[in-house]
Length: 168
Length: 168
Image (tube, rainbow over all chains, first blue to last red):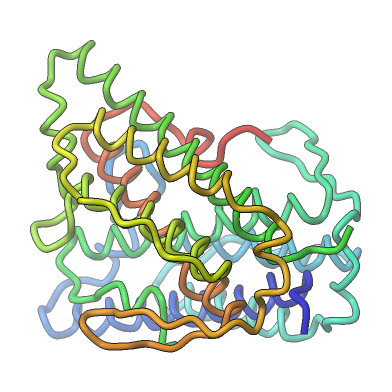
């Protein structure tokens, strides 16, 4: 089978959100074992002017729900961004995976040339489907999941790159 | 045009190595402006049991030269891993980009089902072309470039996510 837009997006997104969720589970287990308040991880940053872990997870999920909806041509599900705990972030991830699973290969395939418009920092930006996926969504997704991982590693959580990659 | 294995690999790799190189240039400029020995960045780690910046760049380049060669079915170029400065890392990136540019779309396309075997931690692992690219090479590439970025941000270098993403 030839590579297609569906294969390059939805299963990759679902897989990486699953890995992210497993990493957050390990952070919670570590917090419990070491009697650390999990909100310390929730609010942790690599440096003061980078987003905290909570926002990293919000953006990672935003990227993929936005991508799935825009490549299909349906409304992007709106989230309130009111998560207050790692458990809330896990629910956001689960909700996002459910949305991704609701999108079919037939809906996504053929979206290489679809026009995609989004607002970035208050400015309209126009993309075409394929570079939107390859040069914007995927780098952003991996950036925010890796940064989540890096924040937790920097805070002593016992995770390794295999947690980030998942099994293969 | 339909998405294909070439589009999902080589141009993405070249683009991200260009962004990585630009980030390293900013690190060098920052070191010069602040009178910081650039070897501090070269050797910096996010946490003691993570690889230093130098190794992050080595692995990022290994991932993509390995992928390009294996999808084509040619020998993976061998590097000595003897870089000692950020300038050496820049040369490694440039050498890798030149190799990637030497590979054509005709050579890569149709490699979705190609059998790929590599050694990971001393153990042979078998992949199929498409999941090798989507679930192994790309996550690894982004992981190591994001970690390079994170190390530099954590050390006060004035870079932002647009440096990671590049222009679009």
